Length: 146
Ligand SMILES: [Zn+2]
Ligand SMILES: [Zn+2]
Image 1 (cartoon, rainbow, N blue to C red):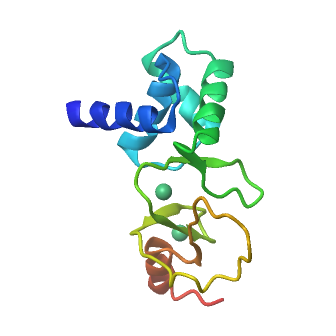
Image 2 (image 1 turned 135 degrees about the vertical axis):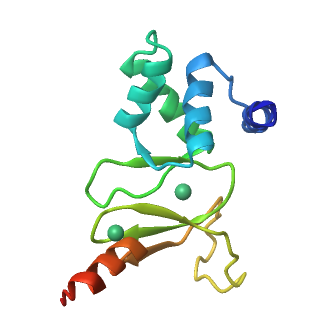
């Protein structure tokens, strides 16, 4: 717990963002739970712990954290955007059956191979899409075929 709050304080410091109570609550929730939550889910969770947290404050906190690079939008694919603490780099896998977003351990891509020209890259991530283990297992149980 104390190492977690220390890590968050460091992250706020490094990103040069003022750690308001709400911003801290939002980042803490995302970092601790390793979830990919929608803004509404984040609001409900933060508000459950601190009923003074209004929807507007939580949404604004989320926006400032995203601008500062402490939180990132994972995937939306036409659905509500999901957010993730970006303290630890990782890639994502999105299941096209159930919509579940899973973390994939970080790996580097061959440096210098990307056709980016003069673009300045701040960060990148790979999003894999397909069928998750659970859905694949359910599929083989029922013998369902495409
Ligand atoms: Zn699935
Ligand atoms: Zn993630």
